[in-house]
Amino acid sequence: MGHTLFAPNAMIKLHKHDLPDGLDFGSVVAIDTETMGLDPRRDRLCLVQLSAGDGNAHCVQIIPESLGGRGADCPNLKALLTNPDVVKLFHFARFDVAILRAALGIECAPVRCTKIAAKLVRTFTDRHGLKDLCRELLGVEISKQQQSSDWGAPELTPEQLAYAASDVLHLHALWAKLEALLKREGRLELAESCFRFLPARGQLDLMGYEEPDIFAH
Image 1 (tube, rainbow, N blue to C red):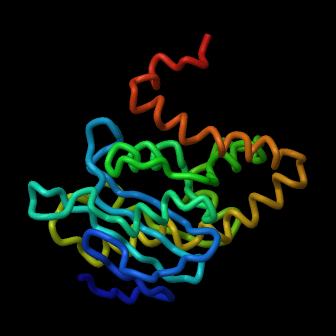
Image 2 (cartoon, helix red, strand yellow; image 1 turned 180 degrees about the vertical axis):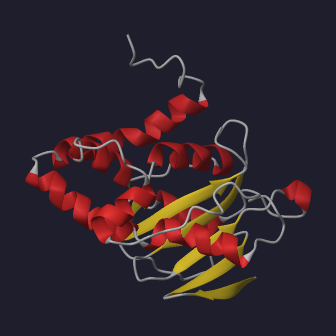
């Protein structure tokens, strides 16, 4: 069950509980999550948004059983997130892989992260947010107006869905720019090593090793 929202230059499809059967995102799928807060040990997962990089987005609303939903019963979504042949492309993957592990009980891999890529090659700036990168690398302005809205609401607004979709619609193009910079600066192999570590980093966060950081002195 779901409905389709047509946003400017994009089709946004909302699905309740799980992705439909037979949906193909190709070899690289852009993914983001919306949650009730920024602590993956406390705050519940509300929405998972995905894009094949074709200008369209699919949003899966995760509704807990206590509110009449199916909770972590989303086999198609889990199969995609754990498929070793599909790269999952995130911005700030550290949080997303942690919340997906906490909420769905899965290890999301393999992954890439545009924030890590940006920090490795854009050392001339401290602006590594998605909005900054889209503006500076793609010439695209995205809105963060709905960032702090209630993602746990039973019915999400068109504005919320448009915001959620904007976080995945540009990740493929952004990765292409950043991958070229990583190659140019000879740091692609280092980036890939960081990406392989991200599922473990997310698990450490869930275990409380975010602070103190075991990698700190």
